[in-house]
Length: 393
Image (tube, rainbow, N blue to C red; front, side, top):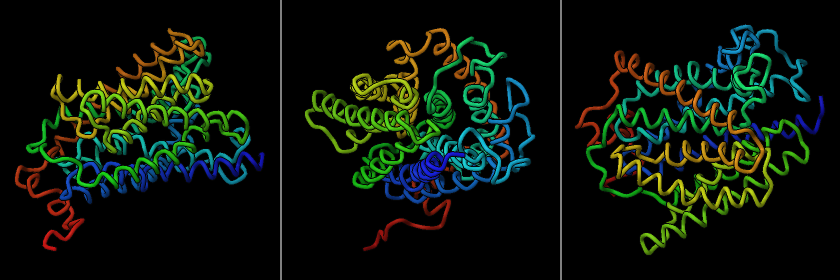
């Protein structure tokens, strides 16, 4: 084991958890109405806790075991055969487990943005747990665990898919799942009010930006120049996408909003994620510059043209951003078109089939959507018996 590598991945693990708790929770919580902010916090916090337990029980073994090309098996369930002395590369395997656990936490948490303000809490918990084990963990095995798309002897593609930190594994899967859930749920009854706390949205986005240094830089799994470059290009893409989102918003509407600018930040971060292990600063500048406009345009396509209430634009920002980054690796000559497009197609089909099946099964047991009266009152009070703010003062 290398001490510097271990120290850096410990820090990176903390940074990636920081992305969900409190970063994503604050980002999403500020975007909803005041009567639903605690429900968003509860969903993010509950998912973080449940995914941690399930990752220990089976998720890690499914993703990073060595059973076959399709899944890792259950040999390492509950970390069987792994202790403080077991090594994965240059770091303790238990640390690799913890680092990957934070990815398994944030991926289903990203989906929260599609269903806020109208979904039942029981459905959220059951769906998220099954989705992580059945959809996310196998995809992680295929690309990062030496499986179907990794370029191993049993791979579909000779050279494997280039997805450094999760354009496909995290962002495509979460984005497609979010879009499907939004379709099954239908529109909110009242979409008239703007985000209740733009300042909270900015604070959450800033935390996500900082945490993303661990997300991408940590994926190098070493304290070296590759990690430093991944961190640098991540920052450049985020900054550029923030500016182009704000510029395009000003061109279209005459004003650039804070919520829009920080949404551009997230678009730039999602887009650079799969490419951060391969590209340089100028390429990151291009990726971020295009992402800030592309993802904003897709927000309008999903909500206005397709009339799908993906409430907080999960598919347009994360799904489209992640897939765009995967494709840009081909444009810049860092990966083959067959591998990248093939990976998108295989994982896209898998995500559609498994997510749809999980939704149908879970909604047969738990109500998918809360009643109209509960939706009007707000999920904070009706689902959790609390209010974020004293409405009488």
